[in-house]
Image (tube, rainbow, N blue to C red; front, top):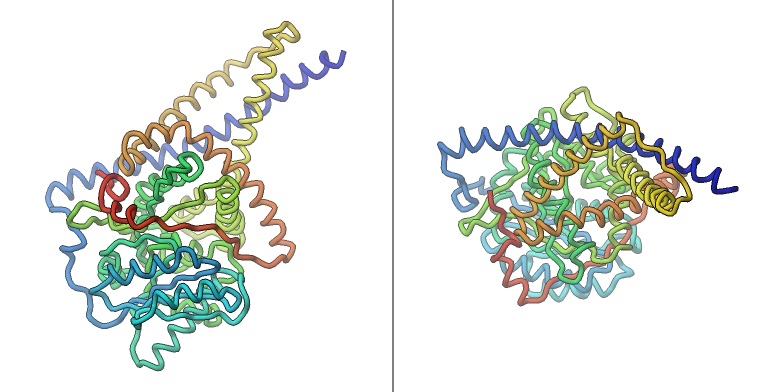
Length: 475
């Protein structure tokens, strides 16, 4: 009978796939455990020997920054008419004390966005509209390079220099004290990155919610340790400031264009190229007097398709293209961090194998239950691996829940545990899509700006930004 051949074959396949996935999980978990241990040691050391002796600073207690130099805020915009106006108006209302100019990059074939920016900039010289030469979409980096050219032109015509370039997206919810913090710290570093806090979307607790789970740990632990280890600091693309002089030095090697239009993740690569070694990068986790974290908030995709599209770009740019575009360094700390960044695609493949094993196991157990086939028991070695990995999984879920609880509260911390399955499915689908894009890129296909649909909260919701767990993280 066919079943006499298939069931033993499925049984052997299940055991082999289970062994492969278990070994991969063990290696990945060991890496995570070492990193977690370093973070715990770093956190305890600072609480015992730093915060016990010195009062924590707030953004209001910082000293005065140098009076010379302005901040240039770059906002690339393609099909953002629905959100860009509200974002710009909010920035103008909040940023009253700093010297700045907002450069908004638009496209000639996107008159709706141009009109929205023009309406928001009426009566102020704080906003400059820059229309790209080509119809959109080109790439985000290409749009940013047009903004850079406009900045350089303004410096020549006005005979004044800008201090730094700050990146933001059209849907960002900015903190009132952001520019004060960036002005102060950019004098001490080539890059300053603020935390990013995904807003909780009530309509999408699972898909949009998983971004909050990931960023809570990413910007609560991983970025903190990157700075503590002295490794380069990647830019998140929003809420980050680049020193004007550092960008100028970079343009000498890049033919006057600081943002690489051939990169899928130009912000990530720019951060690594500017920091590390002798150039310092700062991940700034500072609060205001109300105890709120100075951070950038935004809504992330609510639909599965949009989330997969966005994360596939991240995986293709960081995990795949990063291998050949950025290479490696002669520093174990830097290479360790880059390896952790680049293992996302492999992790997604291993997860896909693990879920296939779960389906096979369920089918074999059903066959065993109905007397169709007697399942062979797993070996003692494999059973031990499974138990060890189960312990690692519990630790990983508990630690992630801790960061989610600190940022969003108990309910979201509990939801983050089952939401791990949603995150895994999204990452698996995104990895397969990213591999396809990477192969196309190797074949010479041009890089395109894949549009993510954005939305901006209503006025009533904006008024709630200063309360609750949405902005506050407890130590």
